[in-house]
Image 1 (tube, rainbow, N blue to C red):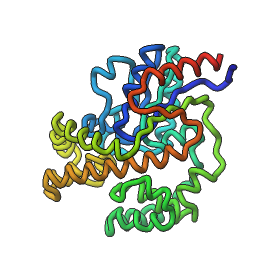
Image 2: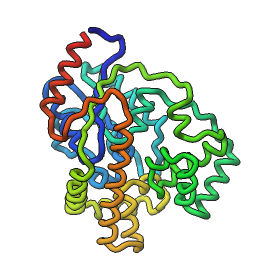
Image 3: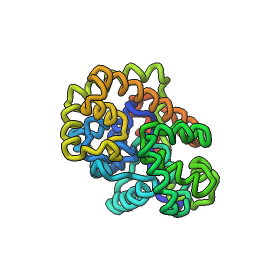
Image 4: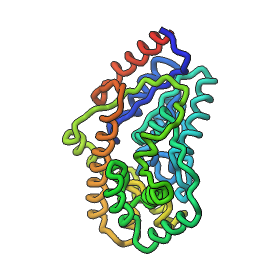
Length: 310
């Protein structure tokens, strides 16, 4: 069987389920490069807090779109697609298989299904929303979002200034929710044939691993990393600080939380995020599910799939 669409492999699933190790297992069988699609792992200042691949993992095969964005810059799904397409073509030009690895479902869906053509937001509406954020905080916008677009609200953190403001301004300007724009509007698909491989684990089994993983991050200098980032970018509203782990450590650095409270909140928010990821990916079609650690069978499937494509 042949396909005109160039192949890519997508390794997806909740945080902490061994997606990078699965990608490296595939790269051990055939020439491949890893391309990140995690919205937090793009930030340069937080390699430990966001669990970016370490030096040993990066040495196993080329890795792209990790740790390049400064804390004060925002990443959007549209910008991600532009960067990812460029990297996919670069990797293909090198004769290597692009393996997309991450847990930000919206980014992957946007790449494979196209970006919703949301109209330009009038400046007056944008200023109105930003004024509300300054006065009431992103939590107020998130509470409204939970009523108007509960599916999208479940995917973002109440403290995420950028995404809550974006959802509010889009709804005000268009009368449509973000969920509608991402699922109902007309947009063209990207020209790739994708093998989607998911890591499936019960949240109750994943939860103790997530807590232990956070303790390892703290042992490896997560707090020092956040302290250095705070010295470079003390703006608490900067996009890089909205990520889980970053926000909690910032709360400690600003004297708003004790270290014990910051850790407890980090664990709790990570669990809630993993739950949202599991819910999102369970709704996706055409995913081949594996348990974390089944790297050999994942590599076998990839080789079979590529062979069948001709």
